Length: 128
Image (cartoon, rainbow, N blue to C red; front, side, top):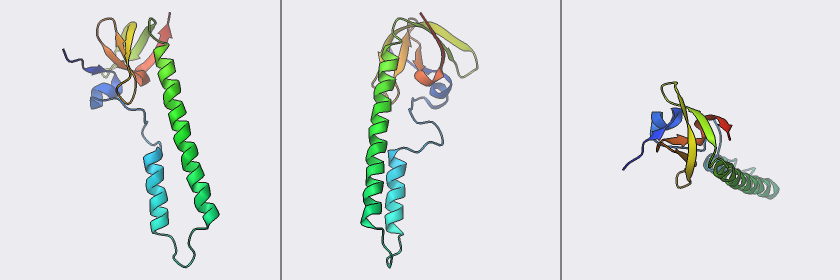
């Protein structure tokens, strides 16, 4: 039995994501760093200290993204057994008790008692 994702983002795209529109992730940071190195002035190349600083920034960014992902997972697992309300693509409200969490996708998906799958970002209320 296939379960279709429910919620504003999930119904519009058929998938889940952790990246909101307009945010830069590590892929974008690497692309910018590579472009900067490719188009730098050959007579005045990047100083070693500048390159090391940018590499350290990338490392920090990667660690923050990993920490954010771990915190999201912990938060999502804490919702098992709780009643949630979420927005559907048609503007209606989805309500139900969370019975399990699917962590296989990029963003954890919550399974409700009626086999409805809800994206974490579509939830607006959580109660006991």
